[in-house]
Length: 634
Image (cartoon, rainbow, N blue to C red; front, side, top):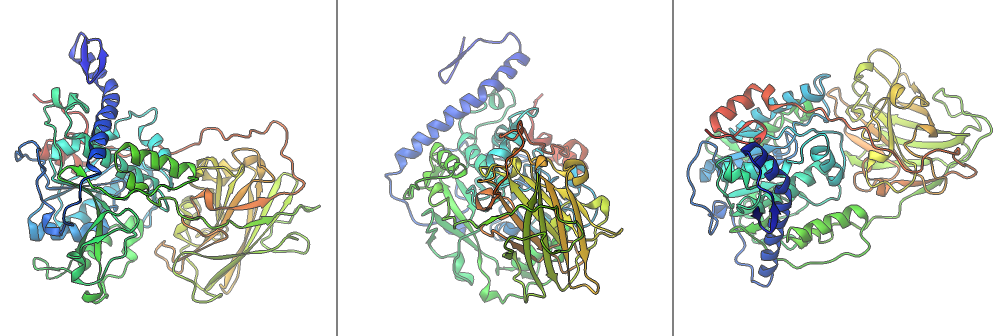
């Protein structure tokens, strides 16, 4: 019998069986090892916090770490993100660290962004992922970053749910090995500083949250030989404990000007020390500011529409701020900070708070759940005759109260003529009708009918419905968007980021729509019939919620400038907690319709590192296997 940290298991008869068995117990071992880290962290909570850090301390060595041996894969700093472009707003920092401190930086990107939009073509899935890899490698080169490691996990639509993302990355039929690969990468690259995104859940992409969570766990585990022990016994890696752990703090408002980099500040929410890197710092190597160099890099992400950013940064240097990072750990040990518990947490936030406790950083959950405002509500009246789908509000078709759509995201409308909208709703039998009248001064890009997806790239109307009013994420909802005009005439519709995505003709067979576009152009009207039978579950007439959103694009570069919505708090299109209630008086769903949504259809296509010449060449150069998979040393 072999005993691994209290887990007894029979000794396999061959090396292949031993590796398979070690993989099975590795996650139990990792969880227990993480528990030891948590216990150690709890013992540190009574110790005083030392002086706040400054940028010059970023390369401090970890006490007790294994002696550093130079290797082909070594980077002083490792950044971990979820998608290509997640690092771009930190490139001014990474470039400074390289130029001034001679610190090498590596990047790990868990997916290739296959689920994102494409502002320059019609590629999607794996083909889009390989394009986005090329963009990322070109962009990070501005900061002299050479190594970008991809874990080949699938990217899907925009979600706010880390648990849903975990199911996609590590659920069947895929191996649950994202954490294992991150631990392997830290051991392979031996960074002193690990940087990642913000793990907190509100108003943030679930993949960003999960990449940060797993990086925090990997930071704890990489130095413990009992975590994923086959990496040590079979693959020849040594345990490695980084010194410092940083997370990007998007919401922190610090001072402007060069003094922000030396200010000793703490985040008022978490109580954590903040590390600042001034964007206005001058690059002697390039003869301009790092803010400008970061802009040059950002514009290389063409598929994401970043090429539309102004080529020149015009903010005066003295008014430029810092990139801010929360310091979660120093010398390999978690920071101490006050813990403020919240009551009556909704499931998403309760799950996050439990995770923060588990990793020994409970202060991360301080005020994680915002004070949600009261959501709007409206009554959807029944009509004796169905509205005629012609893009017009005819008498008696929509007898209920009109709801105004207000600014939600992006540029605020300069006037009602620039962008404004009202919506009306009614019901006939088992069908919901929605009419949205939009005022708009400038017409966006006309996409082709076979490119009827990623509706936020141009003028569009999106309707979101949660039939039971209790969704935790949009995978159990219905979300459909109508593009009022296309390049080959007429309108088109598709579902996105919901229970079943794709062209409406295939994914919502009972849905019908019409659009009337004014000429000369002053706006448009969209009218939609949604068969309640197409919803993922029976509509609850007293609890169904929904949202109506308008995306306004005034350019031809496939980007939106302004967004309007009925319920506008946070991520209005992706957070069912914020949607308004739609009362359906007199409605009863047909007998036999399910009250619980079935499993969602989620795209799983991911580009492979083996299909990327750049990744293959990097693997040969660094010795780190493709997709940071197992190494088989000879």
